[in-house]
Length: 245
Image 1 (cartoon, rainbow, N blue to C red):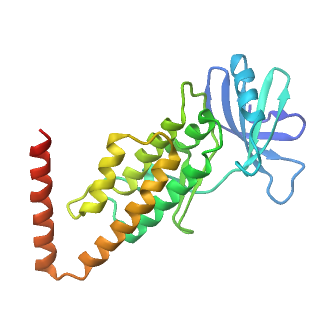
Image 2 (spheres, rainbow, N blue to C red):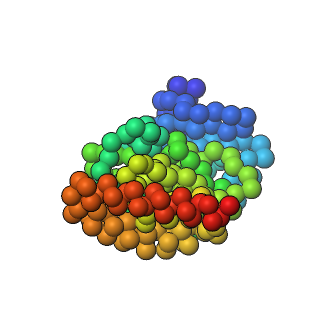
């Protein structure tokens, strides 16, 4: 496979993932000099027809990374440009240390990237929002999506919102110093009430303002003031939990 040449143009240099009737590989476009690296999704059998129909409707403005598709014998090949970064689970994890400003920045980027997927078929957009495809570039403080479009069935616009919400929870975890506005937003994510990424993004825009304002006000308090504010918040949340029960 490492020496495989597809359509006498794409030289496969690394197999990144395989499952029955699907493979994801890194290849070099021997006709391209400046940016030759490409990512190829290979589909066979029933997947060939299903993903052929799905990818035929992709508009370049909805997915700039999509470079086209073609048949190679009995295999459908979809071509995407690669992106740099580290998988999100290796950047945001329990015990990591990020400032609240950075967390808001990355959460906003993640949801903006998810919003950009809104016009794609759910099978494609949801695959791009899986943890293995959400790449964080900490040097440029950016988030990019890799298009390893693994076969996924039964996906809907709501599934994209749920997946994006799960990724945001990694960036904005519940911590001992988490304040009320962020806790309220996380509870909205836990309820999973958003029917699409558009609704989730609209909620985020309002929540972001509230979280930022609350954090800035909290930072102005002295040590004792912060401690009292956190104590009052914990007591308030406990009362709400008891009422719900």
